[in-house]
Length: 309
Figure (cartoon, rainbow, N blue to C red):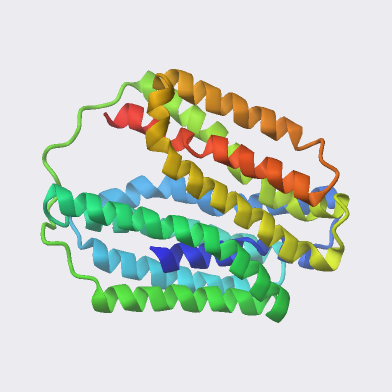
């Protein structure tokens, strides 16, 4: 999962800046297009993930993982040839329809045998995804600044195709390919809605920034020619904060009940989010963003764990 997540982060960091170069409308129109282009892939993935999960129940997840990575690599090439905002939106839409490769990676881990092996493989997948999310934005910004946006998309596509080849060649098929019979008890609708709303709010806290980052950096005094690299550093710092927050999550239970901890984290993140209007330098802005992501990251596993127990 490291290579797949790295490729997505590698390309994602430069997308808002690429959109600025091909947009021909006013600032408000460009901002709306940026939001839709960045958000359509995860939105469609959320809608299609349950369908992909059901489809994979009685099939080999390794083959599906390889197929999704190949199709996503091809769709990345679609982003390369897209020279208009509608074309770029369509390419991102197709990426979302293909689903998340992580769905099949976790299914492979869940069917890998005994509980110890499952935990070890899940931890390895999560670690690979975290490292990819941290390193990808910085590398993507630096490469795009050197070779251009569209060539960097080609690099991302080749990474995905290489990942598919490695998994297809080296990854073993899970020993137990049968669906599990010991399904957990159902979750109450109220709990599900509450968790969904909290996760939605937390996602807004995390993902609102990339769409407006180019304009924010200019308002903070960053030269237009340097916005891509500086933006990569800001997103890289956010990735480091997310990784640190994930590491600290198991220790937060000692500070109080889950309800108190989650409420405190949401409050702290909201205060940092409001304070982002204050800084007049990119360093102050980046520091506040670091702490804001640090506070919001543990909310995801803490909230999901409440309905998984």
